[in-house]
Length: 354
Image (cartoon, rainbow, N blue to C red):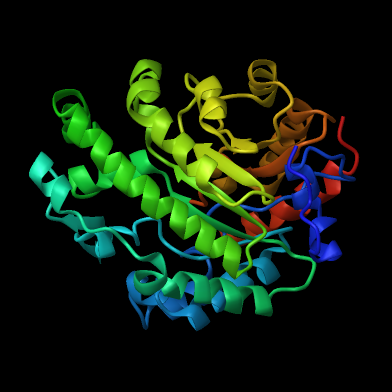
């Protein structure tokens, strides 16, 4: 259990989210949504019509605005800082751009040990200081009782983007690099883990109440590969994060990796819709859990959402340490009214959970 640090804001420490993160009972599950600020919102689209993704991420005033807008429009119980998990790759020495409709593009892709050795060490304060400033401005703009979460991409997910040069379906270059150049792979992961740890700590120092490590693509690995090539580096991040704040460990398609994710670290484990809460609790014990509604459900009519939320809450049960969330981010094109309906339904039905 993560204890509340001394000298903190009691409104925040007694919030539903932070109590659930500490494994304490709550009158209803706290609810927030991954990617709760995004293109499904008209206000966000209006801002993005004027600035690029990277320009938005590097503008603390705009970051604060879109982060707070999502909380106010949805009525969620927590904010998550609007940012991008790939921001560390630029100061490490790669270029990063977002092609409209085509996702991120990184160059040059890392394909040799020599390229790994040329990656630069990163001074987070100097190179990514805008993230901490975004935290400060967002925290100042949020209601006093709404926790703010920071985040970073996990070493494997960042490494896969850096090696592939962008998104991929099969991770052929990443897995080939792991298996044929293991020493260079571990050097790369160590370099990324150091930057990620510093970035998370910078957000904590700037005022977030918890942090999430996103290992979005780690489910493509076998348990054996995860244990050999990933676990030591994710564990290094969690061991290096400042004590006293909740740490959420999230990945997708991790049904075969749950015990290893717990071993790697995190005071809260996030699960996706491919694993039930009952199974996760059976395998992981009393660790607080977050998830796991399928984001595609939000394209269904309200009656279908209500039915699924009832089933979902029943599966989660009454044990403390449950954070209601999606099993991944809100999908592009999701009807905004359905997202609002989901939050309201969780709040309404969550008070009388089976």
